[in-house]
Amino acid sequence: MKLITEESQLLVIDVQEKIFAVMQEQEQTKKNICQLIKGIRVLGIPINWTEQYPAGLGPTMSEVAAALNSTERMEKITFSCLGDNIVSEKIKSYEKRQILVCGIETHVCIYQTVQDLLIEGYEVHVVTDAVMSRHESNHNLGLQKMGALGANMTSVEMALFELQQVASGDNFKAIASIIK
Image 1: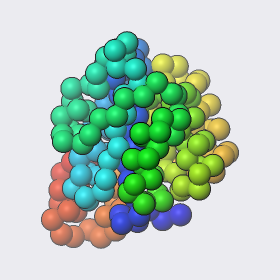
Image 2: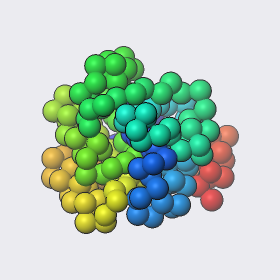
Image 3: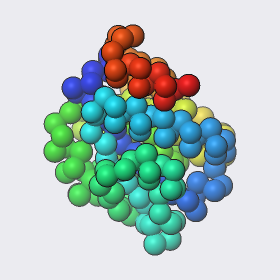
Image 4: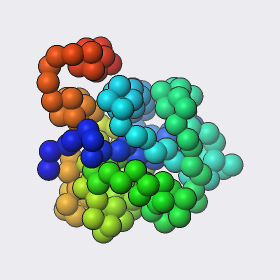
């Protein structure tokens, strides 16, 4: 299904210091997550942001938190974001059925959240270059399973330009400069 700006929201899941420190492709993944957030902000799409047990896993990485800026952080202890009533209600409150998902870990919190979102009837777009696991095999398996469940696979650049739709205007210029 085609991404539509007015129907979309972004869910940034658990990009926290302690767990991110053991991820594969850290720098590129961090860069991609920040680019996605900045582009989504240009387009005026709502963002939800979670932290998994921050007392143990630390805060969101400073670069990602800076890109999120004033977006409200929600703490959770469930692997699936929909397992937490506050997060689940916040997602529902936007009344937007397309959800782009990024964060960590692909095969745990991302996978379980995507599975629950699909069960709830959301159209899910996993931003594959903005999700990661500690081990590449778990990352790949998580992506494979989410695809088999019916999630759409996309990339930062693909999603942002699909949402933008035209190669003109101030938003296009801003997104193009973010992607460079």
